[in-house]
Image 1 (cartoon, rainbow, N blue to C red):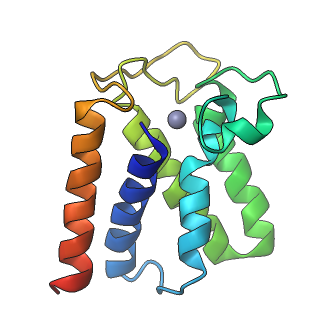
Image 2 (cartoon, helix red, strand yellow; image 1 turned 180 degrees about the horizontal axis):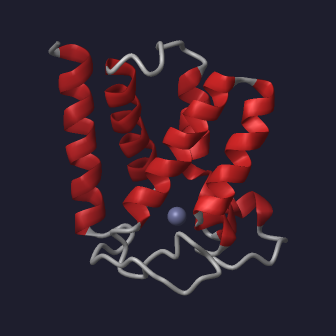
Length: 145
Ligand SMILES: [Zn+2]
C-alpha cells in the first residue's frame, strides 16, 4: 500500500478506538499515529520513510512487518507513555492489517514462513479505492456527526 493509504487507514482505526473511549483524543496523537502507520515500511528502500534508511540492508516485509516489531516498538513507547504505546499499536497494527491485503503477502510471525496474502497491488486501483473509502469514512466521521 502507498503511505497515504496506510495513514488514512490508521486514522480510521484511531477514530473507531477513540469513539469507544479507549483513548481520549489529543492533538499530539495524530503525528505519532501517522508516523507509526508508515514505520514498518522503513525496510522498503522506495517508501516515504525507507528512503532515509536506504543504507541499511533490510528485508522488505521481514522483521519490521511482524508482530514482534509491533511488540518491541510498543514496549519502548510504553516506557515514555502508556498512551503513546496505544497509539503505536493502532499505527503499526493498522499497517500490518492492511498489508495483509497485498498480493506479495505478509509474514506476521516472521521468520516463521506462514504468510497471509491478498490481491491488492501497491499504488494500483484497489489501493486507491481503499484510500478513497477511508477518506470518505473520515469525512463522514468528522464532519457529519
Ligand atoms: Zn508495509
